[in-house]
Length: 269
Length: 269
Image (cartoon, rainbow over all chains, first blue to last red):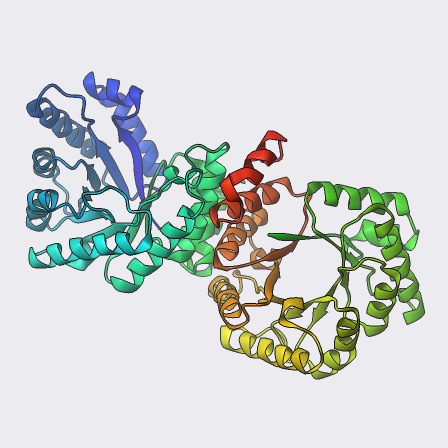
């Protein structure tokens, strides 16, 4: 499993304050903990509450430079605003980089895809179009087809793509667990050269004991073919579960990763 | 999910002693706790360490009577010895009863299936024949076919059958997680009128933190179509996980079972 650490995100209030105050120590401490816990990518989200595009651009530039000062892991640029993505890509010096995210909306494809193509970046493609998240597998797959057609015509290879099947709360519609799992299976079958990625927590919205539901869903999704997850790598129970899921899906030969993690005290029950 | 409580089993030393001493209080206390925790069937296993068949028969008769004195749940008779199964079926007064288990071995089919047919019992059918547990999906499915052919010719309906896909340790062969999951999917597709059942714990043999692996595997198996599990219902973490898996696979409409269990303090993380 590829882990995209979600912690550097301005939708968290203390993180937004740290970004506003340019508190590098606070941010870098969290980044180092994400890396130590096993993050393969560091997601960076500078937030949207700015008076001008110029301010937002200054914030993402600072954020990207602050993160890469301490981490040798690639970043995932969490924005759908072309000017912000462009600024972040220019600030980031590494080879591998991810743009998070695009959808099947024509305007967004036209403005973001050229940046992805030019930088040969990985890109998270959400299985939705202009009408929001479809409640069924067919329309989510149709959105993926639209995106892949556009990418193919614009110089982005299937290997650069991580499709997000998307997750709606099961407290609202009991069928949504299966909808997401079947969407993963269909994407893996239809686009074997691409990967799948997902944020988990939406599934448990409105229910008690959300982390338990999230972990159970994670292991189902891994079994259906999920390649990557956007989550909090400092959640030791979740990370233990991911290591168990890796073992169970033959992604951890001779169980070495699991046994080593256990020796280091990283497997918690 | 159908829960078969595994606690009344003479392979556990204190349980064997309680059976030998005919300690009804000890056994009935555990049975009541299994029922309270959500067991749908009470598995009863009188053990094999007896000097004669007659002793073993006396033990299972006492065990069945002791269990049904306090529990209104059906029992699963855990034996492959025809005389023991016959004695247990005669002692048990309920309508619904399960025999655990048969395999594709011709001799065992010939001796146990008439008892199942006569009592219209449910029967656990292990996906194996004379050569032990196959290491691949094809041979496990072939064993299921052999069993179903025999049952069909001998008056047992597909609805009476719970197929056990069987589990080999992933510490020995990393592919075995997928072998079991794919076997479940194939059984569900090939025998849609039958159910699937599994004991989990073999999967984690030889690894540290076994309950974590078992829970992750349980949720994958439920997602693949597992209908029933033989396990310890007093394991609160496992039972919480099963309730989460029920929610995620649309087996708990409006999440009512999960929310009610949480109100009663039964969901632990």
